[in-house]
Length: 426
Image (cartoon, rainbow, N blue to C red; front, top):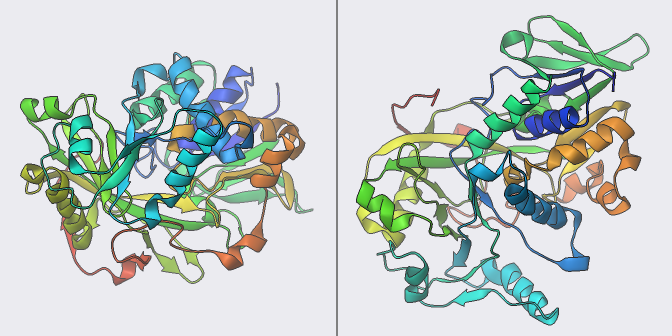
């Protein structure tokens, strides 16, 4: 319990790890980040994120099992329960290919004697579940997923996790003293902590690298990580418009986008267009950049999605627009393992755009590795989340994401941007 542990990154994985270490009684834990919680560049600094899982029973993969565990923990943990909205999730598309995996999952459920998913094959089926839908929904088909699916207030949950960790003794450092430059090594090459951009050397017995899309800048991942960003915008709804969407399922179209009911504080609705993402390549690495605006083509995609679903919202002015960075692994499974050259450095990354929902539980597994090494994980987890540079050569940049142009685009090739004046501290 006296080990000194430094966590690099105070975002989703970092706050979760800090919380779980504190709950285990570790007293010498420090979180380092350039920004205070919630970090301005953390993907988790958001009003809502999806809770999406599958229940594969005994055949569950490590990632599907931890997602189901997280969905249950959102409900069971008093710290996280206030931010959880199990309103359901509808997945949809106009073509067959994006729905193949969900259709196969429905078949597996039925083969196990479980209730299948609710199938939606005409616009009226969608409108029955979400009465606020007034658009054509031409050719839409889809499924309503499990009862624990829905959304969570991401920013509030992250702030709650950090506040509880801080209350239990975790130290959070921001500014240039928290802006980590890289690993600190002794004369023999052993990692003994980290060095920050202010020149400060922070010594530690264990280091956890959980800096989101910036993790690839802290050590060489041999091509396993690709920082990729996506786009979102907010619109303001009236009280009457809010009522039409209140407590209705999240609507996700694999080819077009997704939206949630409006947040409870400001009455703003978040909409995202769906596409394979943007990179920002510098040599062989995609390097994140903070931008509080989105490409014009993203605005068009968002407004097209609204025209298809709720046309009367399509021309509403944006109250907020920004890009959101994630970190793709080649197979979209986590990388949660010790560094191949430093057994006291834990790599906790590879969120692949779908891991915010893990914040109640992922820190448990990261803490296991920080305390007990890779052997602390179950064999299946250890195999799935291992260091695996051999997978980088067969990377599919699209990674089963549809929509947009159907290809990953580099931000440097984007010429026209939509700018919205909004308070970035909010």
